[in-house]
Every structure is written in C-alpha cells, then in structure tokens.
Length: 169
Image (cartoon, rainbow, N blue to C red):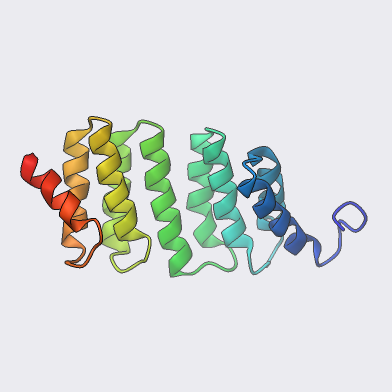
C-alpha cells in the first residue's frame, strides 16, 4: 500500500501499524520512519500518538535531544489527550534518566507527579525510577522519587519496598 499508493488516505494508518511492528521487533530506524510519516499527516487522529512513538524510537536509538523534542511536540498534535500528555511527561523523565541526567530527570519526574497525579503511568514510573536509581547508586534522587511515590497513595503496589528504602536512608 505504502509503495503503490503513498498518497492514499489509508497510508498514515498503514504506516503507524508498520511502525508498531518494527518497534516491537526493535527495528527502531524503520519504526522511526513509519511513525514520522503518520505524525506528519495533517489532522490524522493518531498524529500525536505517532509523534510520541517517534520519540520512543529516537530514545531507543540514543538520540536524546530529538526524542525530547518529539515528546514535547506530541501533545500539540491532533489526537492528543490527557493520557498522551502524561505519557509524554513520563517518557521525558525516563529518557533523561537513561541519558544519565539525574537532575533534569528528577525535575521531569516532579512535573509528572505534580501535573498528572491521577494518571495511570505516574505511580509506576515513580516507583520504577526510585528502585532503578537506588540500584545505580543515585540515592538522593531515589529517595526524592520514593517520597513522590509514597505521597501518591496507600495502595500503590511498590509501597512496602519503597517504605523499606526510605527507612534505610
């Protein structure tokens, strides 16, 4: 379809589907091309999510600056909603942490917790971030994330582990 009919109104949908196939197969260069195509389709209902996935592909390729730019741009595209905004904020924090930029990542995690306290991605991201940073010997950042996590709710699944982490500090 994409080769024979690149101007078809179905091309952006097909491209996004192929993007997911490539992304799941860890073929990030190919995924990037497919998601970029869909994100650029004016008014496409999945443009925002494709831009977010473009950012994830860029992050997997260790292109941190471009990934962060994609995460920032995604909420401004067609198809954006609060779920996408929270996901973009979470992916920004994770990408900064993976790039060994703990101060920037911590600020991004704080924005996630402040701006999207009820989002489904928030508590898991804070919990995983705290445990990951503790293992990486980033104790101050881990404790800060643990505190944000613990403020998030008494029924959070990683609460016991983070309470123990906090008690040992």
